[in-house]
Length: 556
Ligand code: NAD
Image 1 (cartoon, rainbow, N blue to C red):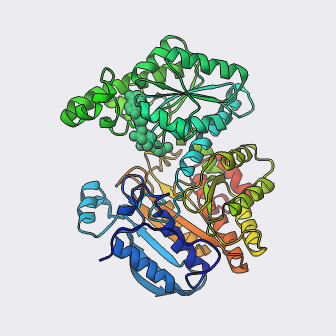
Image 2: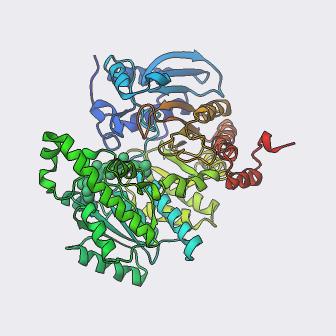
Image 3: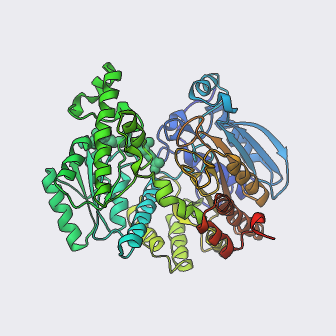
């Protein structure tokens, strides 16, 4: 029996397999389990609760062994983290096909999933854990950066301005694992962030990691620092200790000049939200001893918190829910206006999806940060007119520490991803990059996910729960030459609530890779443009026209 051990992908440009596609799959599987990358590598858990890269250590060993001998005309089948077969295919076919956590509709709940998981028959793949393209916290930071950049664009549209957040104050709470990216994402966009957390360690940790600039002594102090920085047009992030359910209503009552309000406390789980009037030190024991009592007090506090958010919206601020279900919890506590402000996808991200934009990313299989620096320069050269992208790439180069294999993420759309991918392939061919790149994306993308509580919330035609789209997306990527393709269930929002697909394509510098990259990186976002045209979004129609994406129902 094999067991836990530290895993690290090979570096350099020497193959340990029979080709670069197999090598990329092997290195990215191993990179997902690198202790620098994975949350709990001993349990094969990469991120997101129990999102795994392999079902168990015996399956991991079998995948590594198989990838080492897999030929260019063979495909390994992976069923929820376990290699179950090798079939003869052809050189355009993916080297690996994966299906993770899928259950038949009526059985698709946590209880049944956990029963099957306990029997060793399945695993939870999350999004990029089971599809081997997780790149650490850079992904969260960039997604948050992109959301706040979209808020800046919205403010420019409604109030004027340059599209950055310069001269604005964002108020939010929650400086935890995901929420901790907020202050840096706001300052990267040029704005001021006032961030509340009830846990002093969360504030300290964010300062240590340079995601948060300063800690204020009091709410008054925080507001003074915020308005000073805003008046000078300087970016600054300020942490302040307290309970959001108390401090937001106070700031509202005092008429604090807040421009943008959101929240990333862990409201999705009422046992992880501190109720007003409870000391932070007592939170864990109270939640454990009296969960029902704690839950109803937490929900009441969330209702006050959300009521203040609605108050800020009434006063003219830009307000949105950041995917933590705080509106739903406040509604459960009887607050009737909870859904007066929108979720972040319909508000800011969907217009980007309509342009085929989403979390495009790539990893340097060499392990050499210089290769990513070279790709950063190439992206800046390719898209000189894209200010938002340039700001991100520049600041990411300065502020983002790599975890595992060096990688980069940036949001590119239809007509952009293929250009970047082809340029990268040419750079590998010319020796400007020292080894091939693995080019992929998150599943939270334009055409690859059906998730009615998040990515497909409030679709214009009501098609939120239609899950044909991610399946078409996966089949298109197989037909277009991706190196590995996956279909998952339940990522992001849990069992029964989403279906999504992933692809990774390797740039090894060969003409064949160039052909595959052109097709995959055109067709993959293309399915997103098509999905949004079908749902009736005019921005998607415009993208389809501009980029030549054919839509039969609009022809003839
Ligand atoms: P986390 O548990 O690591 O951090 C939550 C933080 O909130 C903690 O630091 C905690 O001290 C603080 N907190 C709790 N109650 C508070 C209160 N009353 N006042 C002030 N602070 C309080 O969680 P996380 O990983 O940062 O995720 C935060 C939330 O965002 C979760 O609900 C998660 O599901 C959601 N999320 C959404 C998306 C998305 O859709 N964009 C992505 C990731 C996370």
